[in-house]
Length: 393
Image (cartoon, rainbow, N blue to C red; front, side, top):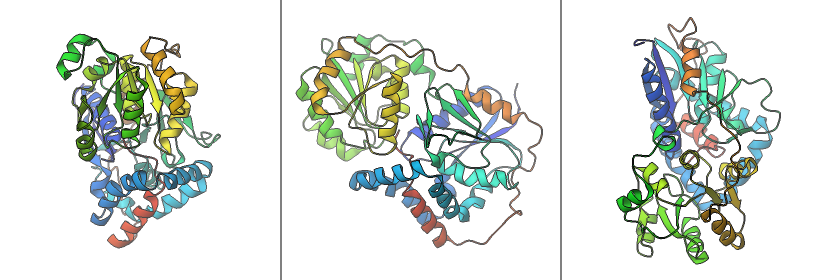
């Protein structure tokens, strides 16, 4: 089974969700006998643009959330705006193409902007191997969609925006790319998990998560959940050190980055999240009820709407609804399960595509080459970034 060929997985270290999905996919593909190369989209960008990708989006979410919501809504309704983004990103396409080894059999993306770079290369014949995209959100925003992408892997209940945009694209409904540690049997029980993290045995606990960046109205959420008096809050701040330092002065059970999230999730009675991304999917796989509260703008609210309609989570719209929702979930009043999800492994979809004959000389940069400069690259990326729906885990 060894030596089945090389696959390149392209992600971006914007938050942790895109990279976590990429890492799990790479592990599954290696188990199937493939050589897997991981590529960070930001590493192939000119230096001025790397900072923009890492910091501009974080700043927009923190200081201009209403602006991000407006841009997300605008690009959700019109594919023309995404065409503009694709055109702006054109100067950096060849940079990504050049890091794809000539013996590559397939390229997989877990970040939407990678589609806007690789899709056109594939469509124009510069990239001659399949391009597959694993969509990390429940909402398939138009920035995920690009001519030239062969297959989009989405989880069950995912919705393409705008309605009708799915016409003409190949969608495969697959399992979520989460570790088996979340879905499989746990080596420890709830009491052991609570002892590991220093949590009280006899209380109802709500785990509050906000992605790797600790984005959104986390402090307000913690205060309102504590005031409801139904559950005791347990907070994970991710890599947001400032948030961690503030909360740990006021609250007892506050964590920064947690490596063993499966154990922590199994230690609590309910998970409260605000983005509907990979962490939400992990909680659902653990069988822990999930409540969405104060979702971040853009993809967070869009995911919340889909999850609520599908019966996967409860979206609490206001603080007045928080106490009864927490009481119901903590008492075991869960929504009925919506039925089994897909059994299709996204690694299998990629493996099938990678075994199609052809693929030597995966990228031919001589076709359609054009001159570029770093300043132009940076400007293009910054402008396009303002319309990106990617982000925290």
